[in-house]
Amino acid sequence: MNKIDKEDSLLFRDTVDTQAPLDKDGVNRTHNSKRKPAFTEYNTIIDGTIAGEEVISYAKNGVSGKMINKMKRGHIDNVSELDLHGYTLQQACESLAEFIYHKQFEQFVRIIHGKGYRSDNGMSVLKTQVASFLKQHPQVLAFHSCPPKDGGTGAVFVLLKQ
Image: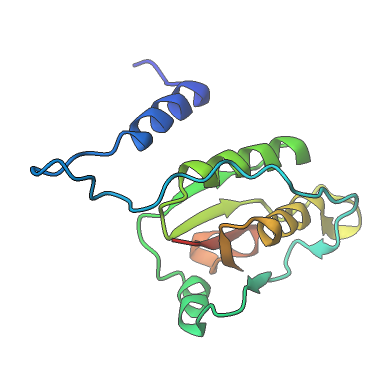
């Protein structure tokens, strides 16, 4: 069996996602809004400031506690995920931008960043960058470290603007 590489998969998904099915009366009922461009105006960090075992949480004003608790408890099914293990900071940011672009009509996604056990002083550089990136991204309303069954402090559930 042949494995499809990431570039081909993204090209296919981009093509399929932009082709909206028409209802029997010819009206597009999939999404009422147009696809927003990929986010590229983020800052990169220099040093890790978040420990691998530290819980991270962020929410913009107006996000309900119910949504935060849903992420905190892991009551999210069939969520798309992106695993950033082994990525450089630049690769991680580019992948995050593309992933959120392709998943922008989903309510939740999961980002696996790891705990940074190979980082200096126990401070995870990649985890710190992911948190910084997500706070800057205009489509991200909130994020919270996952419960242990979903990756624990090595992953976050992210609530996206609908």
